[in-house]
Structures are given as structure tokens and as C-alpha cells.
Image 1 (cartoon, helix red, strand yellow):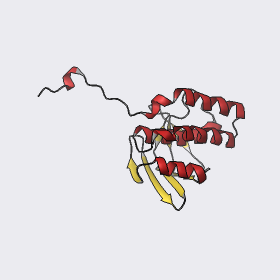
Image 2: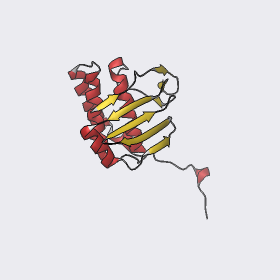
Image 3: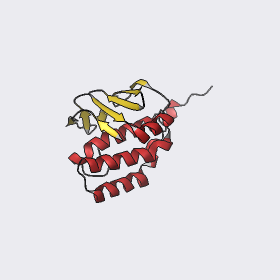
Length: 159
């Protein structure tokens, strides 16, 4: 189970689609919390290119605090609708943590299921929630690996 403590407010940007206006806290409970704890290699404050996060364990729960100014791209390959905005934010955070190798990639299926459940909770039709889930299951795998750095000829150093 996942809870959203505040009403998410965002505004659109040009380079990255969305930026969080206010702080947001996601609370993971039950099986999702247990799986997250088993998969996460870090707790505390993180500074990322997209913005700041705090991961904290509070009893049996996990709280993920997202700083104002956190940037994300919203739903990828789908229409950006109100029923998709909360799930796309937490889904982008989960995938970011996997790319940073803070969250084990084995959590990917759980992240995708959380996205589907939140979509339905926020009013998306079950059919659309199902096919957006299938889309991230099919095409999302490549997005949980660290970005590969490439060297240009001028970057090579001979010793």
C-alpha cells in the first residue's frame, strides 16, 4: 500500500516536463514497504540531477520525501492526464533509484504494480491502467540500468 500525504501540485517546464511545486511525502506500507526495504541499499538524503529526496524508515513504513523543485518527465509514451500524474512521479522516483543502483532492479515489477494501482485509485479506467502497466513491463527494463558513459576521441587518455 502507498499513501500520498499532500495534493501534488506541479507546473510544466520546457526541458523536463514537470517540476514539483511543494514538498511531497509518499508512505509505503505493508508488502510494498517490506519489498522496498529488502531492495534499498541506502536511507537518508539524496541529491540527484532531478532534485532532492529523503528516504526514511519509520517503524514498519517507508517514507519518501520529495523536495520542491524535483523534476520528472511524467508519463512516458502516454497522454499526461490527471489520473496518471501521481503514479508517474513515484514510478519515476523508483526507476531513478534503480538507475542510481540505490534500489535493486528486482523491485521493478513492484514499482510497475504500484503505478497501476495508483492509476486506478486516481480514476483511470482499469483497461487503461492495465495497458499502461503492460507498456512499462514491456519497454521499461532498459530504463533501470545506469546510463552508459561514452568516450569521445578527445576524452581518451593514454598512459
